[in-house]
Image (cartoon, rainbow, N blue to C red; front, side, top):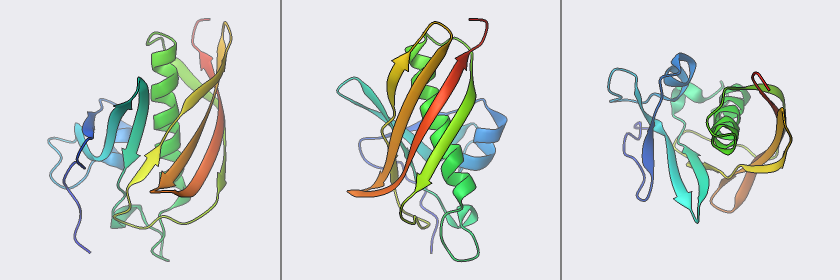
Length: 149
């Protein structure tokens, strides 16, 4: 399978200064590892939506996308949503649980729609679903600490 390097129509590639995200999400043709051609975002009626097109290096020996790659996508996507919800204050993941419901394969476009479920003074609760088209791949619930709050 050839590696997809194009940003899907209607999406924008995400720039990241996070070394771990650059390592996980940078795709073929990424510019110095800062533009992640496998990780995308778009706005849907004021809501941040994120996409990930894994390639063969994200797969396990069965040709299915590794759970660790999926969890990284969830953590980055939920984190971006929470970070925006707390006015770009520093945050850290306190808890992230997921349910793997169906497989993803290299080349699939995974779409994550995170949402804030509760925001308190020092913590934020968020959840997300990840789908390929209309098929649910995984769900997650998370808890985030606002650093210094």
